[in-house]
Image 1: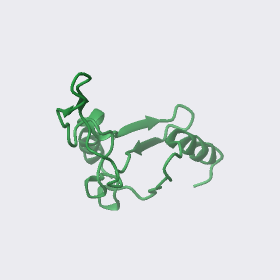
Image 2: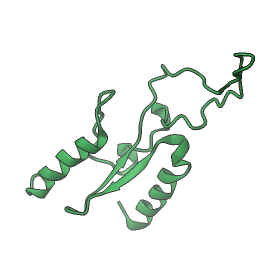
Image 3: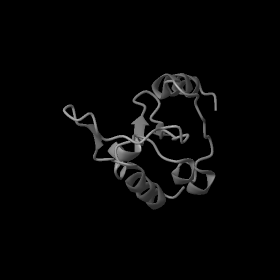
Length: 110
């Protein structure tokens, strides 16, 4: 991937990261960069504010602040230059996975 393409991808990747849940981790030991995004499987319910007096639901936020993206919104694709794409199970820590990968790369394995 060309340097300019990588810079543009990083800008797109980090845009609205609070809404999308996308983030980037850079290893201090190997210098590798890991792109992480949570994929929404569609099982989430709508959310908003519950009025404590009336017990009614207000302010449906829809897709805002959900901390994930739909599969078709993912930027981690072969077309965007990613060649090692890993999907984790629900509840599996991306930080633990990155740590294990980083230890492998640190030993010279690829």
